[in-house]
Length: 435
Image (tube, rainbow, N blue to C red; front, top):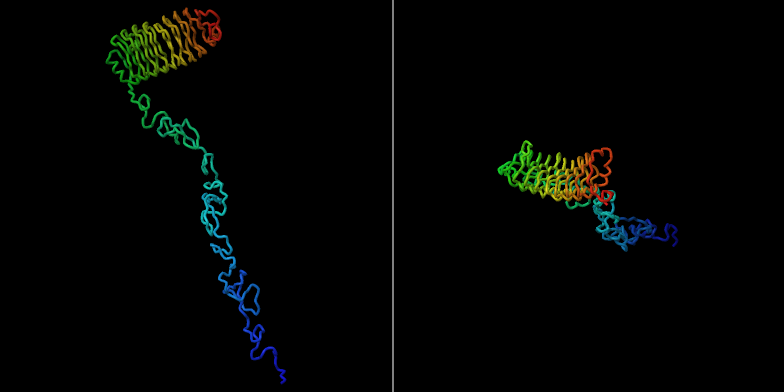
């Protein structure tokens, strides 16, 4: 049978063709996006197409469309990731991490950085450390000496150091660096002392008067000790006299000896502002002033004591007037620490063999050494000049020369005031030495 009216000879008309031109076909198929290329399709991303589009698959089995199944995700949910990263502590907030302090985390924790380049993890590199190793520090601090241990420093004595040295404080608040603030000073200026200061002149003639003087550590006034009622003086606690100290004179400075006193003992006396007078005491054998250091505006006169055989002025350094020792039985006159005096007078000491003043540098008055029959030697090794007059004569046993600097004054302008005689040197004087 001949039928020429069939438009699609290859497909029965009762079936027909779908959108894809497939006879009796289902139409366009659904394809699922395979973004990660693992042949598993993303059920949430698809399209209809007659043929498989590139990057699409015919299944929707991909449970993680953004990551291939063969790669998988790490603990941080990163596809193919390495897992948790290492982060380094940045305590000083300089952007550099401490290699010795780290943690593992998926995201950067606060106070941590990804590098381990901090060579000083506790100090910002932009600030740096001072010489003492303190981050941003000022360098070595100043410490003040605390001699008295009261926690207050002496503003005049300091040092710099990173750590506090022993015996130093951080402050400079000590108004009295040699006395503990809790002790304080007494009336005489002694730290922690209980000095008794007596005001006014004291005229000492009786034992009762002497008992009054015996309670005084310091007298602001003149002390006159005289008269026949006394037999022994001291030991007395007296330390300072702001005035004259007289033995053998009354309050009017008239001679009034101590005819019965054999001993004067002031073991603590250190200072007088005026003269120390020990004059005209016929039986006096001992004068003990071992701590006397200074007589400011006048001298020390110890004379006309014909029985005197002991004298201690070993600490005397500064004598504002003459140091005179005359008419005694002393064998040695020793002032080994004397530096400065207003004059030296030594005469008529019948037993004297030696004078010892090796540190004497300045003599602003006389050097008067006369009529000491047995004087054989002296020590004036540091004396460089005598400002007024040298009178050295009638010492027949003397075999010493003067220091060279003094010898050079003889015959110099003003030399007419110098009287030098009876220097029985058998040879010549060279550099102050008899040869």
